[in-house]
Image 1 (tube, rainbow, N blue to C red):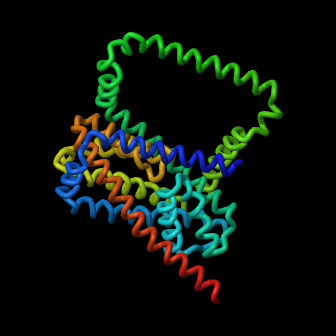
Image 2 (image 1 turned 90 degrees about the horizontal axis):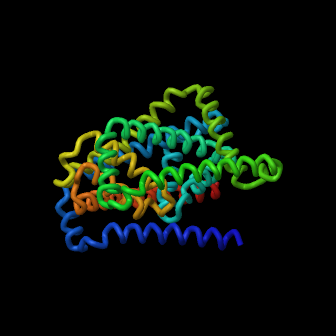
Image 3 (image 1 turned 180 degrees about the vertical axis):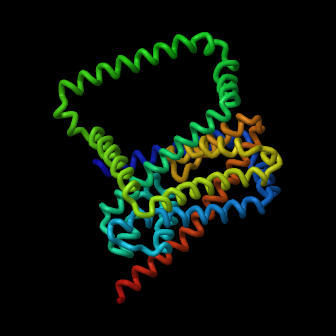
Amino acid sequence: MKKIFSIIRILVFVSVGIILFWLVYKDIPVKDLWNGVKEANYFYIVLALIIALFGHYSRGRRWNLLIRPLGYDIKPSRTFIAVMINYMANLALPRMGEVSRPIVINRTDKVPLDKLIGTIIIERIIDFLFLLLLTFLAVVLQFRLIKDSIYNALILQNEKLRALFDIKTLLIIAGVFVLLFVLLILIKKSEGEFKKHPIYIKIRDVIKGFYSGMKTIQTMKNRWQFIVHTLFIWFTYFMMTYLVFFSLPQTSGLNLMAGLVVLTIGSLGFIFPSPGGIGSYHFAAEQALGIYHVDKEGAKLYALIAHSSQTLTIIIVGAICFLIFVYIQRKASNE
């Protein structure tokens, strides 16, 4: 039953991603998209891809810093291989990469899976907090543009929505407070049963993982290296976003702040559990560029080029890394 539910869930997320992709591009002829792709300046695209690979390598090195206190000294090349297989697996199935990455190191270096999964949870929590920080920074620095864009999209285009906006907002807030109050009462009455619920257990484990992660970083001998790698990883993400602006005439005039906004909103598209962010990233990037009045065709073309170039790189490099992983396994079994 669980397997059937998992398959259905995967099919739903894949379908939603494909539908979103279709909705984004259904109004643009394929010929126009292809002409835009051919006329793009590939110098900046290739430069962005090279920087991206440095970021992926840095992610592997950062993971090494979390594994080392466990008593295992893994070669940076092997953690890089695991990271690239992680990205490639995520293209096939949402969240599959988080499963494949520890398996690779477990097979090559015999590190226990439970310990490796703990380090990945720490990584995810740190990156999520960093994304929240960048999102807050983007909203503060570009508050007026973002506010005007949301207002124009949701209010000015619909007079009826504007008339009901305040009332609906108040009703929603009141409803949320009522639900929270009822939930607290139910928790109090069935505290023992609630603590056994899978959702409660999952939230508890995430909080414990966050606490463990903070403690690990504080006691880490090379914590400054960890911080530097984290900053560098997100710097490469920013450059991957910003450099592609210069590949198209519609986006070449955008500034650094636009790069930050597209990075943060685009990252939300990758958080959505569609394979490799297909559809969800394209939609998010188009909305982000709309804040800076980039025409819809240019915004959609940018999203297509940025996402497709990164995806193609992950497939090629990931496939090479997978072949190397198979070779390492066979060599170890023969020995």
